[in-house]
Amino acid sequence: MDIAATAEKIAKGDRRALARAITMVESSRDDHRAQATELLETLKPQGRQAVRIGLSGTPGVGKSTFIEAFGCLLTGKGLKVAVLAVDPSSARSGGSILGDKTRMERLSRDPNAFIRPSPSQSQLGGVARRTREAIELCEAADFDVILIETVGVGQSETMVAEMADLFVLLLAPAGGDELQGVKRGIMEMADLILVNKADGDLKPAATRTCADYMGALKLLRKRPQDPAGFPKAMMVSALAEEGLNTAWGEMSSLVQWRRENGHFDGARAAQARFWFGEEVRQGLLRQLETPEARAVMATLAEKVATGDMSATRAAEEVLARLGGA
Ligand code: GDP
Image (cartoon, rainbow, N blue to C red; front, side, top):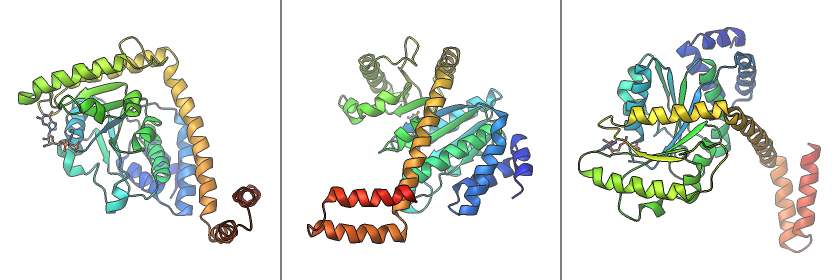
């Protein structure tokens, strides 16, 4: 790959160059990784900033319907929208569930939209790096908004929240116990809770659910990165395309406030620090996976099991070797 030429094409918004570059960052081949790193470094000086929006919700809540409608609303405003998906479960099925273009037919045909299905990866650590790099590539390709979609399970939310400027939680209207169904930790990450399906017969339930969440959000500790009124809960209907413009207005005003008050860049700097530490940790873990390290571990584990060596001493021995590697 000609790095300089590819970088130039991406900076001009060339889709195919962008798609190929993302394939490169998703690759596990060492030569691809090296090229990807070089490409990202070449693109970095452009310094373009998109609004990165993390979007989470359990399957069936209406994420693809929402992204399709919301994405089209944004492209209708002249904005360029990229959609990336993070789906740890796709590792199990070996294919992509989220980000499937057939789920967002209208948006995928839109010349101002770019949809990238989730790569199938076994390790969340690997997914994190690839998603982060794909975000950087889309940003360099001058997208205005990057939607990062994830399913509402496990650690993927935390990961997405650590790479997004805003975190949006999509919920469906439900009975009274619904509140307990959302983990407190996930709610604490949300900047905006959207109660979807606020239409037809579901409207009264949506209204109640929304009120419940507004109440619950008020009880959370105030965060310095929030202006008055945030985090916020509101109703939308992705299907009827209602409330979407208002939701975008809330997101925009939050971003603007954070930019004006230094929280936007501050959060990105904190995220960069976080991912640096994370990369180092992942790198150390990878060192434990080499055949030599596994053999050493197995031998020492045996000694620990039979009482010939203490767990502490054996661990020290392994760590000392890693340090010298
Ligand atoms: P995802 O699994 O979160 O991506 O959910 P989908 O977007 O595939 O939607 C799941 C189901 O909910 C589909 O049958 C949608 O038509 C329906 N749905 C999505 N949004 C709405 C909405 O705003 N109102 C109603 N009534 N149904 C919706």
